[in-house]
Image (cartoon, rainbow, N blue to C red; front, top):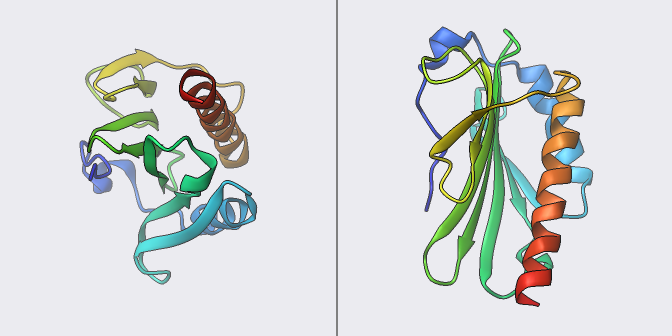
Length: 150
């Protein structure tokens, strides 16, 4: 199983923004593609918000999908999308905004392995706008999977 990246110490990104994580959790919980949400460590000390996606909405080759979200009071964030496949392989990508040496603060780790990194531009950095951008990309990915496998 692929784990969320830990490429930047959370201290350098600032404290986690619990209110934003709770806001995003409410949106995840109301999305038809999401079957469950959890907080890693717990709701009182969240380190990560995880949304589990409905595997029944994917072709049979995909056994699980999830979105891992970290959001910090500094406005830095990481949204990591991962699909698990029957062949034990995974497909992943990540939208990030944080200080780093490899690209601009706002960047995208391209699929299928999230190792190639490109600069990213978003019309807004508001959490709900970023969430909307990511979920639009996930919905398009599901559509593409069905058109190529279905």
